[in-house]
Image (cartoon, one colour):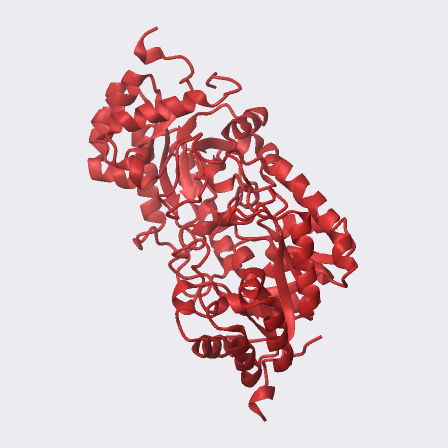
Length: 286
Length: 286
């Protein structure tokens, strides 16, 4: 068995935010050599590296781009850094996703501006923002996956915090075009998760993995840990997803300051080891 | 109008964790002199001050004890400090609550021990733990209010994180004896909150107020802020509660390291000012 065809890695995708300082050409080569077939890409990093250079690195390595983004920021039109993210900007992000051949574009609701959080009004803006963006995705052959973030990031980054809520928002739109991205780190605590995964069915366009530290995250954003080092029952999540019909990739996205400080190859090695220790119900890619 | 009958404070209760270093005798006197009629008491602080001394201070000041606790820790039988909290220990807490004349005993699910968080098993233990404790509360004339904590504290302090979940757990038990405590800080982000407050009706035995900082909490436990300084629409919460039939007190419980460092009287002054700025739909106590 060659390194590039390592068994059990068929559905693994490596999100670049897990190794944010790893130059994209090295990251792509490292993934391919380790037998990882897909990567998740983050807009800000891609723009810093250059879209063309990123596209070339991914193509040369023969990788899939399992996700790109985020689009969205519908709630108040600004991103977490306060930059404006209007429809034109979201369309530019779709153009980038199309250029990269991304399979799914992730959408986040975005922060709420202003002092008082009117969640009902935010919700209406998110629904209309999604509907407005959708034709532009369709014309580029892209599917959008709305991702609930953990409630501790409400209203800083998202007012959509549960799978139920994300499904409520997308289910009036065509299932072939719009679904959800389920990051287990964001939703694992929810007793409704098993039932909502069943409800979601084919709406799940992307699954992301990381773990919740036993002592709680030290940082609201950068406080995740490696699968198996926290308290989430990752295998149970994977089994439920697969039972509900999910056939897509498992993107590992571990936002962790300490991990990010390690060399890229070491991060990838740890991700692969951790991933292979999960008892996966089926290694088959759709 | 005397200081002790200040208008608009009829339903305000001051939780002692808002000023954790304020000696109980001074706290009780300070509240009474400011026209605050109720206090919420925390078991660890009461045990440090002495139960008898606390009871005397509260009685001398003519205050209500709107809540005492927590009991619970059903999920793994230990509290946040790792101390054992079994049935006998919970009964001791009920005895203390009875001695203090507490109107409501707050229950929290407690942390999960062990590496993997089996939420289903925890749930079963919480349900049976509540049912087991209930007769001991009834025989002491006490009502128990299960309080969901924010999901960022799962599984560190509680696996019950939404009002829906808390209601699911208590609604098989008699409404006259068991209900919920709704701390707006824990549940404000939940798009289901309005509907679940209606569902809760008379099950809401206690309401707690504080605010979510605009930039997010700096600490998972001690990161709250004063009402009006964060992004929660407190007035809308109060209106919904009252519309759903709530007639009890509004306990202000602001766990904040910076606030706690101020003198007790200054903390109380700020709490009263902040509370009076909320547009309360009705100042009447039940």
